[in-house]
Length: 465
Picture: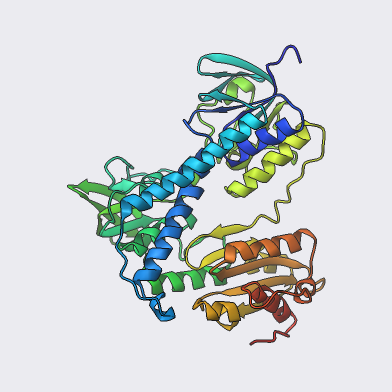
């Protein structure tokens, strides 16, 4: 140990990095975490998951008051938007949570190395001009926005922005064009639509939410369109020009054809994210990336170089904060000589639109490629709690193996789908059958009864439809 400054040095303090550092410290390992931002927490806490949810929650309240949902329940108000205060509560949420991580670092005696780390050898990194040698180094540098050729982002001008810039808009745009029909684009587009913007989503594929279950994608499109979002599917953006205080986009059919132009006050570029591996000096550590810019690892998160590990968005798999957290815990436990495992077949995903959209496991399309399946669906309009709450949109879908009845996937659209999906994930982790879920007593009246009913529908015996 005398030759090393640390047992574990984590590069990056996002959900994967800070969790890995805390778990390593809990296991008695001398730990440091290198982070170049002024605050801990990475993209998720600073400019991603947390601030976007703060804006989503606030804008839901605004729309409920302005759009008549509250009036239907006998509450009549005329809301006035105070965007400055709305931004302020977002910043307060971020400050509280990032400060909380700093407290946890101090509590667990983790050294925060302030600055961006770069490898100088396989066991040494340089941070702010100082070298640190560690027995184990965990790469947890996360991801950043994927650029779109022909469309130059400049968040300061607030005309063509990325997800970070879309959180900081000083006023509600008259017309926002979202390039990309994925999770981030739909969430941030929802925020500004609720606050009064016209929102047009341009998506290259034939449907929004790529990778999700087909029924969910179609229903989500239908619901969001009903809410006022406009969609241009099978369309690509080839160019964006800023003219005065507006942007003019050039659009072309994905399959080829005549171009058209579309004018917007704000353009949000949201076509995906890419791993943050540039600038790490991986070559000096003896590492390389694959064609997608990712670092390949074994099942225990070790790389080809002994003593170097990688987790989160820089390795293959979905770029999700909770996946990174679980990998951070498992990686730290493996370093400590324990057995850390992540079941990548059971990683839930959530879209925090209204209603929320969530899924875990295989889509129906994926499941059918593997063999014969049984599917049960239950509409939220038949769920007593959803009906009472004036939340009729959506459904729950359970996909099970036709022979064993083992649950292969669960997908749902509901106001609290993100919370509901945890039950499905836990059931699948224990190898549950649809019958196991169907014969588990669910509290009444709750949204989660829809999961029970969908499970009952797998074998053709739902009660309330």
